[in-house]
Amino acid sequence: MTFLCCRSDSIDENLALKQARVLIEDAENYRSINHKLDKHSLIMYELSHGLRLTILHRASLVILFLLPFFEWPSSLTMSSDIRLKLKPPNLPCGVTEGIEFLCLLIISIQSILLYYRIRRLIRPYFLISSSQLMKKVLKCYRRTLPTLFNLLFLLGFWLISATLVAMCVFNKPNRDLTKNSIVNTTTTAFTDFYDTLFSLLVLLTTTNHPDILIPPYNGNRGTAIFSIVYLGVGLYVLLNILTAAVYSEFSGYLMSSVQTRLMRRRVATRAAFEVLKYEHNGIELVSSDDIVGLIKTVHIDTWKKDTLRQVYFMRHCHGNINAKQFMQLFKILDLSGPANQSIPEQIPSLRVARIFQTWIMSKGFELVRIIISVFNVVFLCASLVLLWDLMVVNNWQIIVFAYQQAVNRWVHIYMISWWLFVVVGILSLTTAFIIESFLHRRDLQPDISVIQNQPFEIMRNNVSNFEEPIGHSSNQVCSSHHHNTGSDEDETSKYRSTQLLVSSLSFLRRRSTTEMIPITLDEIFRCKLQEPSEESIIAEIYSHPHFRNFVAL
Image (cartoon, rainbow, N blue to C red; front, side):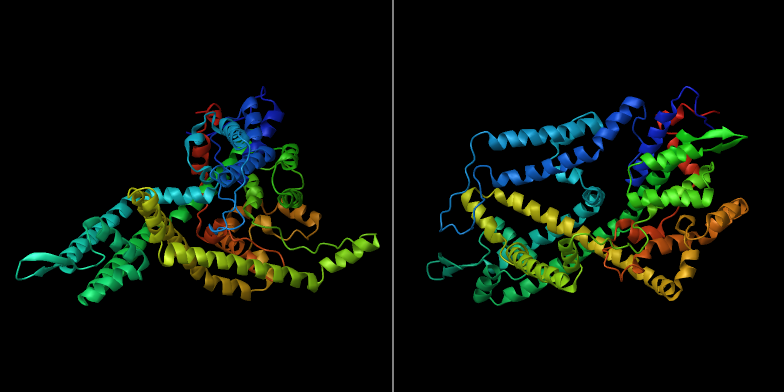
């Protein structure tokens, strides 16, 4: 089967241009093209992904997360000291309910526009649905659950076995040998099965809980051997095996996710070509007017639009382009940042404005910024250390005991579930992500030294077609364009590995500037990605109902 499709004469060219623009925006944002492409659906799609509704949606999420501080019983006071007996704010009846209803209404509207159903409203965490990275972590967590459950079962078996051993060995009553009656019971932390189980779980999480270690050790020094064996096997063997297993499951997941994102971008770009193309002498082309109109109307970063416009003029001289040239042109979307260019300083006319500009650009202002940042970091670190000491390092069971006295023992289910999900699950995934990123960076280190030792001109000559220097004259480029079309494919295959490597390491050349260059997942794994084949892209496109109607057998 060959995929040949031509635009019907009845299709409005403005609609085709709008479809191409939406598809290019899908490619820019790594969105799937599996949505409707008719006129009315595109209006709803643009409205749902518009900037205003997105800002309203995110603001509603922030307000929903801040509402618990103002709802009764409010915990928003100047001090957390209960001795001061500060009164929290008491808002009038209906204020928080009205704000919550308005926020939920905005979220519902965006959910209906996106999916035509209100499935998201039943999700407990709206923030997760708005973060791609959190979605990836949860998907990886779901994929890791079978292995995680097996190791948790092994850890639970070890915990129960240690509980039984501790109760049998260290919880013996003192008896009066003459009357054969119980006089006193040794005061230890191993009183009954559940308390012993929970105490050993706390010991496994903190490793330095004095309420568990000291009383048994005072009564029987053999508990030192028990604690060493228990912590040695449980903490340093089983939990490390658990982390290694999670990393083994996690290894390669982020790379496959980034590979899927690249596939979505290529599919959306090729789909934009499919809706704009026409056939001329058996060759499928896109007209220059459509290209210029597409670049003009697409909603992407301004520097990308300018780069697209310049590269299109320099390489194609406002001519018609085929599918390969179209795909090569829109690979500019893969760039993570604009090239360094000297921006001319604009000198204001007012003397006060010039003085203010001079002060802003001075080193003294930069020093003030650094001092303020240092103070903010100090205050933030103090808060983080306090929370770390309370929740992780030691005595997180104090909170559990407080809730147990206020409610009942069933609160342990929530606390232990929280520990299993966050500490065992999420933190293990975070550790796996750090290890994965470190290994990729370490593998790139030899290539980094090679690239840095090369002259800048040599590195730029090895960059992909859209990253070529555009300082040459337009006549040279236009005249050479017709002579070099036959060797484009050979050059692309020759420099593909160097293209990906240089694009993923381009931030090293800009490190000396004052611009902050963010490192994304695509930057980390780009040198390992495989370019999708044209057959797989075409097959993915024509699985869409809109394009399936144009398939000719």
